[in-house]
Amino acid sequence: MFGYMAVFGAVLIWGLSYIIMKSTTTEYPQLLFQFWRYCAVTLVYAALFRRSLRAIPVRIWRMGLVQLGSSHFVLGFFSIYAVQLTTPTHVVVINSFIIGVVPLLRWLHERCKPTRQEKGAIAIAVMAIALLIGPQDQGVNIGDGLAFVGMFGYAYSIVLTDRLLSKERATVPQVSFLGIAGCALLFAAAAAVYVGINKDLNVIALSVLTSQPETLAGIAYMIVFVSLAANLLQVHGQRRLPPVAVSILFCLEPAVTVALDYALLGNKPSIRVLLCGLLLIAATVATARPIAKSGRRRKEAALDR
Image (cartoon, rainbow, N blue to C red; front, side, top):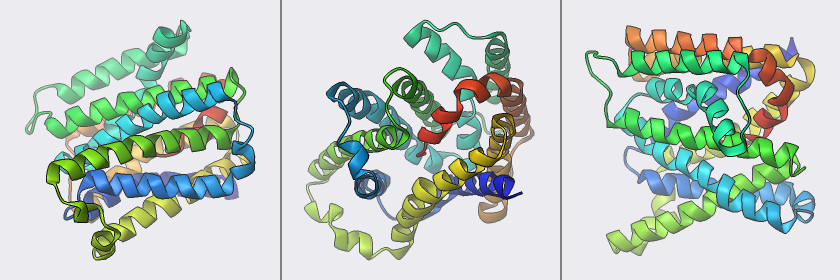
């Protein structure tokens, strides 16, 4: 029972994360929110994993900081703006398209042919995309487009994480730190550009951040719950449950986000979005067994969202 509760707790935290990002950055620059978040997480991880980090080879530093960090940055940068222009439900449903995108990226990046189950997932994902972008009341807005770009960063981070863990023999703490640290460096560069454009150094001052307790609480939530607690719950759950059960439980994230989005923000999902989410859940369930064999470590390290 504890295993199920642990995994569901992680799903609940993830489902709430985009709602927190949307509601706590209305009066604070979204870019700087992500900058402080990833810098803080990098410092926490450096303190927790300092012994493991000393053993990282140079080639893994380069791949982790540059490639994996860039993919995390694409997800973090585009998703924080996407959630302001669309609903958290849309962002999470679009992120679920990784079930079809990851096999394609693995084929392009590593010439790894998709399995029969993965081909089925790709077909279902294409159907879901067609359903999502079809004619509807509100149409697909800019926020949905930004979320699609961020989703590709998310998918590529999974492919790179798998390569670092399986081929380069890096450890989970090493991969986790390098992805977040590389992302933090890119957000630091983006923050510097932002400050230069605004020509006001005070905009990045800690005093400005601390004067907005709601934003500070949002960053604290992303650090303590999303980056630390959710991953601890996930690992504990995966130690007690079969991988197939864990994979299927992860499918609950869109449903949890829909419920929280409606309850907290009043965003009622359209029938098309609900059907799209159900299709993606079906795709995930269909590929649960192949994911169970090779995706366990990948899920443990593809941690931050």
